[in-house]
Amino acid sequence: MTYFTKALTLAAAATGIAAAPVAAPAGWEIDASHTTVGFTVKHFFTPVEGQFSDFSIDLQYDDQNVSASSVSATIEVASVDTNNERRDNHLLSADFFEAEVHPSITFESTSVRDAGDGNFVATGNLTIKGVTRQVEMPINLLGIQDIPAEMQEMLGGAKRVASFEGALSIDRGDFGVGTGNWAATVVVGGTVDIAIAVEAHLR
Image 1 (cartoon, rainbow, N blue to C red):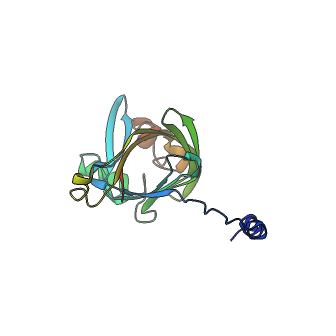
Image 2: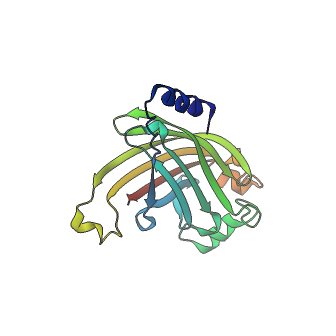
Image 3: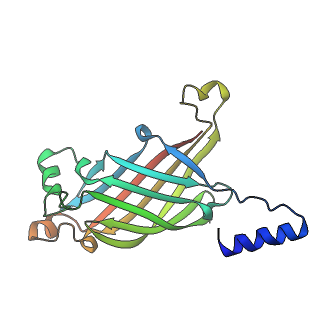
């Protein structure tokens, strides 16, 4: 219990008024089958898309007070898929992600800012290949609604559903990814566009 909370409780007791509990933001369960973690990077001039299929996301979302929300994610590098096995294996090597030494990519929000009209910005620490940088990820709430009672059992007991899209661009060189030879820095573009689409359920 923080000093402020203790003081509030004592003050309420002294005046005979019960202190109202502060509601925590709701923990949403990610629907992995309708969630994607993707990226796009150029090979010379051609955009090449890829995704990670193994990830976990912890979403605490408060639609009444967005600033109380938080998000964290862990992505398993070995699950990278660019629809080319040779390229995927190269990405796992020391030339790029060095997956045996750095098996995960993580993001941990430090704050969430309401930008209005269903938009907000998650500021946090992105760690790739052992390097941590602060980034800002704009996020758009695509929709949120209650699930009719007759459909809840079919959806595993979920009572509400929400969908989000997040996107940001990073310089992979900032994280030491693919900087070891000319092919990695000339043939492959330095800017990586990350796009995340999340569907989440609240029980």
